[in-house]
Image (cartoon, rainbow, N blue to C red):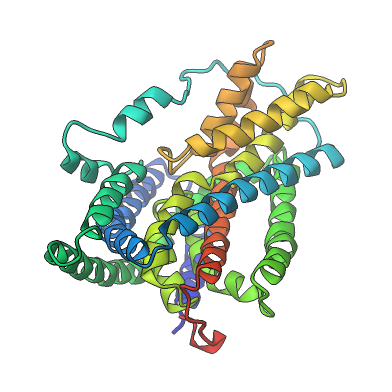
Length: 409
């Protein structure tokens, strides 16, 4: 059975369970929430070992073949371009379509969010390099350590051959372990989807947030069905650009309902290799970069959310200077969300509200009930971007073996 079919079955069972089980019971709801947190931890269990060992091998091979700089350049070019495109899509959609206002609440903020940029920079170089393997959220920490090992192991191939051989063997081992985890996650996602559906029902029943959700869906259809396929067709000269979307069905399902960009890494890695045929020397290095920095989906949903909040408070037209400020801050800060794999979009929204000031410091509370859904759509856009971006990099660096779509897993 195809992997994506297993995940869609898990999705259907999760939604069904949310309607037939006593979800209004407090004890049951707490149990489902606990299981969801547990299963997300299970899904992320092998992420750091897989990223670390695969990146060592990938950097080593890319440096040996003298395409490391080219691969890095193309990757960051796509990251910046995709974030720019997604932010523009979000801004254009909310400016063209005027969504109904959200009723003003009188809730008091109990917590504030911020991006500790200095702390993030310091965390990249802990006092011991081995501590880099303890960080399970900010993957750039272990990626830098892996980059250093991979770079140096390629400088003297004979002397450091045992290092490469060990990393290569461990990479294959963790890949096989990750494959096992992706199989059981098709079952475990039943609880994750059930918990998400329980929250979604509470949010959708009043109808307040329905127009915003519809806008997110329409934007995703435009991006996934038109913009990205057109880019693939012209950039990669691919006559079948929708095959990348087909290969992304299972990862997109898990990313949307899990709302975690790190949770989906093992499943994406498997589809990049077994469906799209992308070699490890490419995906082992480029995908972590996309997972860390390509957060244009968060910028898209944040832009829409903030302007919706602004219009809920004011009936005046928004000044051009404010629109440019929102666009620039959403776009720029999205690159700093690598340490927040889950909930980054809502954190970005709270930062925009606090920076805008003028009485908007706690206005993010208008959308707090829908924060899980907002972050789900952000993860959906970001995961698709990572899949498409990796495919483009692999084609441009000739690190791909094209598979027939009938052989996709």
